[in-house]
Image (tube, rainbow, N blue to C red; front, side, top):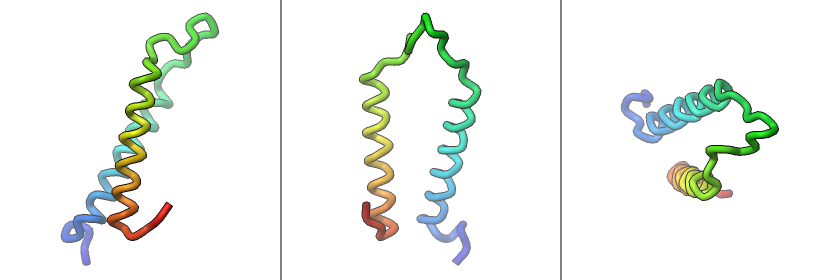
Length: 68
């Protein structure tokens, strides 16, 4: 079955592309200086994003029939 006709494969491709974009954005982000610490980073927002990503990955694993 071609990827265009397989919605799971298409979703996997989109997810992989999104992860690549996040990786490039993180790599291009300037590192905070020692005096800045983690200025501008809201720990609650990071935790919320992490929870959403974990839930999305869990749903994808469920669709793919994978556990853990």
